[in-house]
Length: 303
Ligand SMILES: C[S@@+](CC[C@H](N)C(=O)[O-])C[C@H]1O[C@@H](n2cnc3c(N)ncnc32)[C@H](O)[C@@H]1O
Image (cartoon, rainbow, N blue to C red; front, side, top):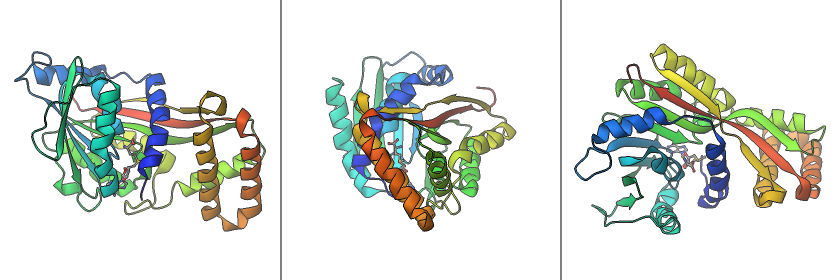
């Protein structure tokens, strides 16, 4: 399944706001970074190793690295060459906007970014998470993470991932996984039928070797992780999109996305879908949308 750089850029501020409003406590991870580093963020300290799956242009790093603090080494993986090609520029723009230092990197396909109390060395790799899962550097990673990925994956791929994470004794942080809640304002009677079609579409195969878990992904992951001895914490990270608060373009995109998915799911619902789309676009200026997401942090036994 492919995602355009434009779509990832459009959603990133809403993802960021959702993460900022989330009550997920990252203290355990911050403690791990500090422990790895020994004496804080100084030169010579061991970096905390992070593996980011389905990285896109690196939004997960931009949201997490400053919150984790200390020295970090991130390895980012995606199968989309176009997103990876955009990654250095997007990272560079972010560093510039936030007045972060960018010391010379070790190689052409790596970057260094430094904030006030944190520093990241990052490298990236083009790899298919399905075909090449076994080749990825789980071993040695202290944190495996993803954002907006888990709802795309199948039950069998999730099981394979969790086995890898467990074998590496790594922590797992999966943010922004849809949980099935969708609330449009002002509400319309056809919203329920649209949500049903959209939810069903989210279970179609997204390239992970079987039906996508969609809203079932986090409960399924928690069940397996607890069986593996992990301590799991969950927190909501909902999108709040309001036309009156700069969200008109995002709302328009969501209306079109829901309509396209619903039509693909049930071409026979064409009248319902097109009427819904038109009504939603007409009332756009006074509309808002809440999309339910969950963040999941799982810590291995003894950490
Ligand atoms: C919804 S995007 C999220 C991107 C990024 N984590 C973010 O938060 O902006 C899902 C990402 O997973 C990647 N992806 C999907 N299927 C993949 C696969 N089979 N192998 C590697 N990456 C994949 C896509 O290319 C895309 O970048």
